[in-house]
Image (cartoon, one colour):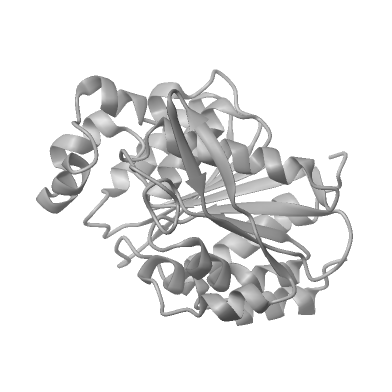
Length: 282
């Protein structure tokens, strides 16, 4: 059972975790690998004729037993950095898994700008979590940041298993995003894939939303985000509401693309209310 003090400790310990996630840090892979509550979460996926090795780590909940699990998709660093940053969340009696998308960290590439292989990697991670005896497969969540939010959103479009989805600082309508993206963003995309209309629509969360969504969605975005305009988040929220989805938005004044610790607090509160406190049969 999660007590108020336990949740408070998780928030206090993780108050800087979101900043670390988005900014990166010099973490010690050796220390993480020696942590008795962290284990490798590597696996293989196949997409067409291509095969990919996906790097991942899984941090076990502080309390033993069948607990909910959160998959974190963070493209700003490798899975070691991600799991180090999110480790305090296990104090909520929550398993946390971090993966590196294809072409990032120690996952094989190419990345192809959140292509089908990124969605396949996220979906296979959900498969593996669901199969674990210590994971409550009825209480799964996904938290995606930046390009990871695109992957999480596309996963939400095709996979009904996650009960909650957290989307942070992402672009969700690529055909509208491409013309207004900054030059360095366009250059980064061009290095990975030619942005034809077909390719952009393939990566557009809004273009693939199902008629109905049962999951609860938290959208986090900085109002002063220069890399990904706020209207991308607003457009997605409106599209989800049109489909009857439960949506909560939190737009941070004066925050840019990399949100600060306040976003982490929002994530913990959202998880507590919609994943951690809910019963397995709820």
